[in-house]
Image 1: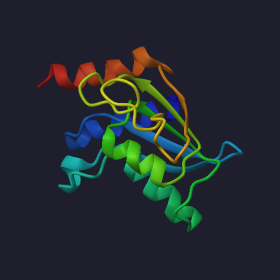
Image 2: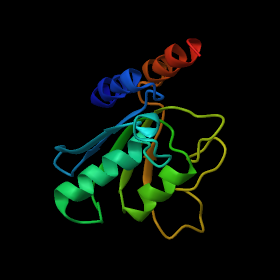
Image 3: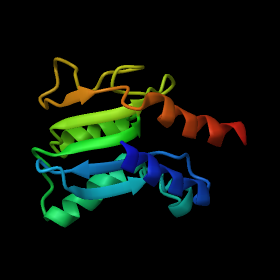
Image 4: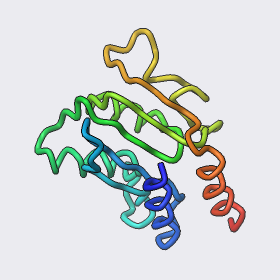
Length: 142
């Protein structure tokens, strides 16, 4: 999570919400990284999770990331939860909860819905205070 937090700080330079993500393989090697690039690239899908998943899939030359873990500083939204499921990420670890748009327990629970055909292990609240502090800093200036 410390690596994801460090990556999230890159978003301050572009005016994006500071969210960072990494994908690690089953051996713990980082194979994908990303931070929010929505404002930087005028791309509404450029959330940190999607950027990291795209990076990892390109590196592996495979759309399936079975056995991989996504670590992200903020609870994923519905779009990102869908991308996690579609990429076959095995484990999600996130820091801060998103009470407005979170889709892994706050507002919805896309990944653990019993109707879902994709099974993703979820670990929440990792370094939650540190992750939330980045967001508070960003939004206090707005």
